[in-house]
Amino acid sequence: MSLLGKILAILNLLTLIGAGMLSTMVYAQRQSWTHTIFLANLYLDGLPVDENEVDRSGAPVAERIGSATLTAMFGSADVPKTQEGSVREVAQDLIKRIKGEVDPDKQANMVRVYAQAIVSQPGEWEDLISMMEAKDNRGAALMALGYVCRPIFREHSMPTAFIKKDRIKELMGDEAGSTSLASPNEYISGDTLLADNAVFEKLLKSDSPKRIATWAMLAKLDLLFDSAGISLMGADNKQAQIPGSDGSAIPLDPRTRKLVTARLLTILGLAGDQASDKINRLVSVVGPRAFLVAMEAEAADMRALNTEIEYRLKQSMERFVQRHSATIEEIRGLDREHTRLQTDLSDIKTLLDRQPALIEERKKNLAKLEADLKRLRGDSDGLFQSLQAGAKNLYQRRRDLQGIVEHVSQLEKRARDLELR
Image 1 (cartoon, rainbow, N blue to C red):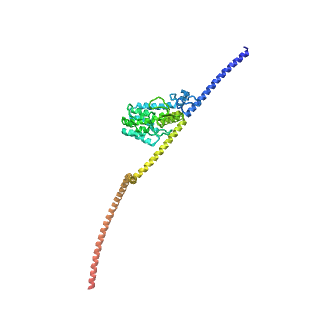
Image 2: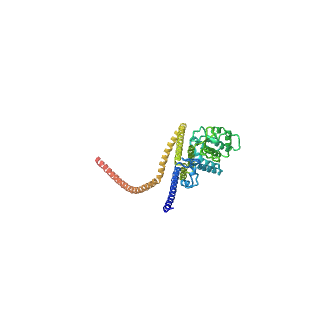
Image 3: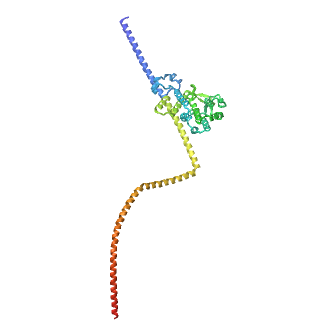
């Protein structure tokens, strides 16, 4: 090969090496940009709902989430890479704490934190509170059945409430006689449950009213966790589903499941520890869009609940006023009398507070009066002595005048005698 050919060959080789290096740099930068865009989409949309969620290209989103992505989003790689995994964490934590607590009261309070977060109707609030405050098994059982038989789902129009058949199996144990368990479907309607006397009798045999309340609240939460594809009964993963009108399980489409799961995580996340880092993690898991939708839905429920409560309070107040109008007028009269007495008492207290100053002032006035009296007594003694001397002088002059009058009388007598002569 000629020298020129060798030079050209070397130049071609250097060109190939440069092109390879440039391609590697471009590919690395492209991967970095792609990962940045992927991370930005995760920040907006949240984690995938499960392992099967795909992106626009049809690739599973969860497979692209590695330790670096989780660390960038949450500061730690020890975080579930799907929303389903976050729901599973909540469910496992709840089940673990319930099983680790033997005190029925503490168990009920644990579950109540989550159960009260999904209440959306005043009647449901009343049932929950009455059930938690029940003093005997009969009262707790009646309120528990009423509480369970209220619909829970907001995303779907349900003709009646349902309970998971496995929850009834757990309650009944080895005892037979429950008509609800005869159904082939996975869910039992509220009407069927209310007609099942065996369930009611089994609830009456519970060792504590709080055990009944815990069972009812878990039965309520079952449906919510089922909609996210997680079972509170300790079973393996299942499809996300809701009960149909006949009690059969109806799977949720991916879009609806993501909405339901995001709302479930938002409700349960806000029901627990509301520290800022926990809220930030919750927003990252479900995405700010879904979090905003869930919060708007919660706000709408709270407004509706508040409106209903205000209406009931107004109605109750009107009935109370009509029923006790005479008593209310009497109370108002007593209140006016009380106000008057309070005013009088305030005046008396003011006088009592001023009493020491008044006493000191009176003491000063008394001392002044005593000094004046003493001075006047001295003056009166001198005047009395002067009057006594004057009286003595007047008495002496009176005697002198009497002597003169007698002398004049004698002279007149002599004059008359002389005239007679």
